[in-house]
Amino acid sequence: MDLLTTIRTRRSVRAFRNESIPKQTLEKVLEDAANAPSALNMQPWEVHVALGEELKRLSRQLLKSFAERQLTCGPGASQPLPDKFIQRGRECATAMSALAQRMGMEFKTFVNQGSLQFYGAPAAAFLCIDESFPPERFVDIGSFLAYLVLSAAGHGLAACPIGLVASYQDDIKDALNIPESKIVVVSVALGLPDLEAPINEFRSGRASVNEFVRWIDDED
Ligand SMILES: Cc1cc2nc3c(=O)[nH]c(=O)nc-3n(C[C@H](O)[C@H](O)[C@H](O)COP(=O)(O)O)c2cc1C
Image 1 (cartoon, rainbow, N blue to C red):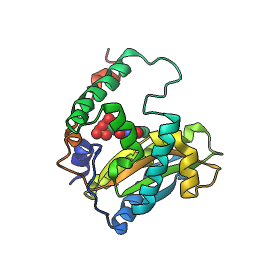
Image 2: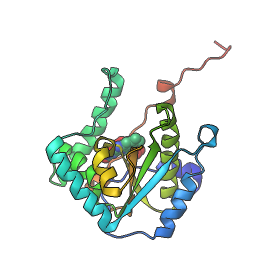
Image 3: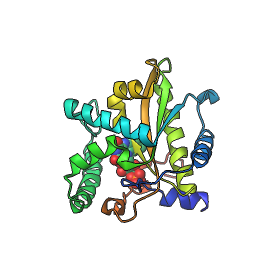
Image 4: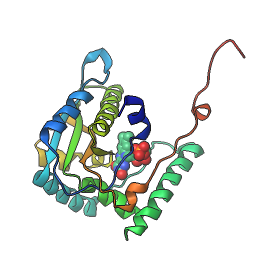
């Protein structure tokens, strides 16, 4: 698939086949992701990849922690968000909710517990940064994330970014032996898609360019 087609067709997958993926493919995806731009080419990302039984063990721990702490997926905004963003989030939740119901699950349970179980994926990459970097450098992790999901799609893998893990830092660092001085920014579930699962019918929409771009030129 060419790059532009991959960019336009990639989507997050929330149900995976119970099948492992070759480590060499994951290595290639991570190698591609490392081509992402970063400020001063510092490449601040540090990636921990949990596979198979290790990931299942972590998922069990995260579910236990979820039962106690109830930290959920959400915008995590420090102030009320402008209406249009709330509206987009609602549309996404409503569409996914109908599909989760077809799988016999209430949406919030599906998305929170599902995220913390990496939706059953056989692999998850945890994108971390050293705590000495300022928050501005989280942008570089975002850029790595974008390259990673695109490369995964290019290699025929399904992926879903999982931001909820950031709320469960301590559990993850503890379980995966990640030093205290690292910040878990986001993770990505990776595997083969379960094409039968209704949730994977979900297609997210996008605002049109004129809704988010303002041109500044001398033609007006
Ligand atoms: C930083 C980040 C964090 C995300 N966290 C989660 C998550 O915790 N759980 C989840 O199901 N999806 C998560 N997503 C996936 C988004 O919901 C998804 O990208 C969005 O709905 C657009 O859909 P698409 O990826 O299919 O284009 C996350 C995406 C990003 C970029």
